[in-house]
Amino acid sequence: MMRSARAATLALLAWASASTFGGGREALVAAKIDPNDKGEPLFPDGHPNITYLTDDNWDTWMEKTDKPWLVDFYHPFCPHCKQFAPTFFKVAAYYKEKGDVYVGAISCMDHVKCRRVGIKGFPTLITLNFDKKNPKAENKRVVGTHTLQEVKDYVNSVFLEARVNETGTQPPGNSTGSAAGPVGLTTEPQVKPGEQLRKELWEESTLPMNHTTRLQDAGSAFIFGLKQGVFMGREVLEDVELDALKSWLKMVAQTFPGAINRKLIQKLAARVEPVGLLDFDTFDALVREWQQATVFDFKFEESKLNFSGAAVAVPEWQRRSDLFLGEGVTYRACALYTCGQWNMFHMLTMNPPEPHARSAELLVSVIATIRRFVKHFFGCVQCRDHFLEYNTLERVKALAGAANKPLALKRWLWEMHNAVNKRIMHPLWPKPDVCPTCGHEDNWELVEVDKWLGNTYAFREVPLPPITEPPKTAAPPTTEAAPHKALREPADTSAPAAAAAAAGGPSGYKPKDAELGIANRANTKELVQNAAAPLDANAKADAQGLQGVRAPPVSLFAWYFLPVLAVGAYLLFVRSRRSAKHKGYRHPGGSE
Image (tube, rainbow, N blue to C red; front, side, top):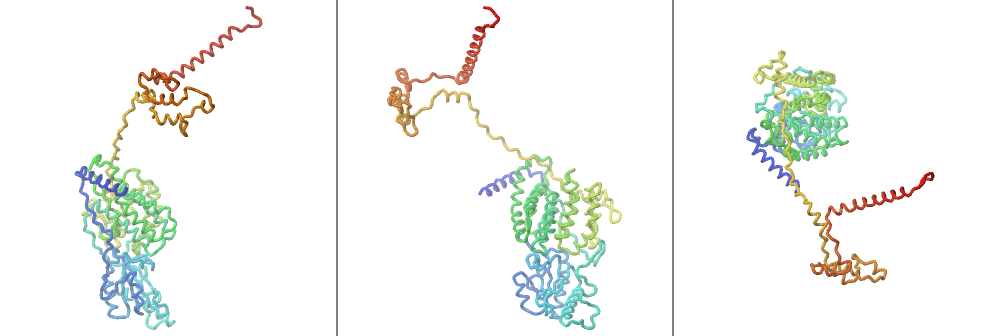
């Protein structure tokens, strides 16, 4: 109940600040994130040539027939998987006509089967049940995109291996193939930096790109990496993988754009830091719990800021509270996750942009941590291998020794990104229509490129003063007459209480004389009752006994002065005694 009341209060504060102070800034765009969106499957259920496999029906399909299986383990947001999909449709049609191999596909976005069989790159083709001596088991897997002929050669090589295993001899007429695989097919294509394996021309995104959409895509990429990359092909993180995850969260919590966003990520990093053993279910629950709290926590942090005190309009990106919702599959400027991840990488190299906001150690950790993230949690095998080959530990050491580390870090990632663009036949950037003064390949104007990178990926926040608490209403000052009055006027004692005291009740007054058997008229019941009763003017004059006598009223000053007067009188008395002794003293040799 308290949390809901607090949320309502924050909502009112946010509405008030938006309606009162939002006139000078861009209107916030409504959130369009579907937390349940997991993307459309590349190979939908009901396809005539491709079996739609899931966690629930996997065992049923595998047990249904003794035929071999060729299965594509893909991710619906993987660019290589999308590029390979048309080829795989042709593969399925080919083997449907031949009738000797079943073809299936399973989305690794939705099903844990991919983790159980250790899928660590997309797309991955796996052959199963080819070897009759080892039925229902996996035979061989290959990772990456392939042509139709390469897939045929791959399947033929598995058939050959199974026959050799069954007969112990290699059939004649197979000089083009071997147990290791056919000529021209590698299980993991090796591509050197700048080398083109085959022509791949991906269309660039035409969606609007600005600070807000880029930041939203970076937030989606961050979530996608946590949910789809960290436990890719594994149920429990090894020590080195857990350390890489902790380093990643710690670094992102210091370099992600937006002070409030960094606070939110820091909370997640703090939850993971003390963990010594991390499995998928634990991490998934932890991330979901953190996600649910991010919007509330963001608005709570905003409620501490005074938006009316901003010198200029607050940009829209600075007020996005929904960056970390959903499954990380909603993109506004990019087409896919990889573009969003590159956006995020560039932001991590340039934020926060204020002078002296980043230490030298943090700048070096950015390149080292990005390298470890790609090594352990990036699903594109070809991209991963190329990135690690291009970014060796020697490059990390070179950055550590650079005189201008912020500039070296910014240019390092720009050069790396363009090396990838060249490899996949993307145009190098920034293109002339985006930055006319930046130059072009082999003739870059680096100063202009640096400016363009800073304007694009550095997020400078509008400083906002904190809201000052209104002064609490002070209690009215106590007048000096009040305590004086309390001291001057004795408390009124009720007659029953006085009677009980005279009777010597358990908590009442019992005269000492009565205990000793001494007759004392002052202790008689009548006098005690008369003394306890209020006295009028005539009664005061006629009152007898000790209980009927009241002390004269004395001011508060007199009560303070009496002890001082008593001490002074005592000192005078002592002094007079000493003076008298001195006068009566006779010296032995003197005379009177």
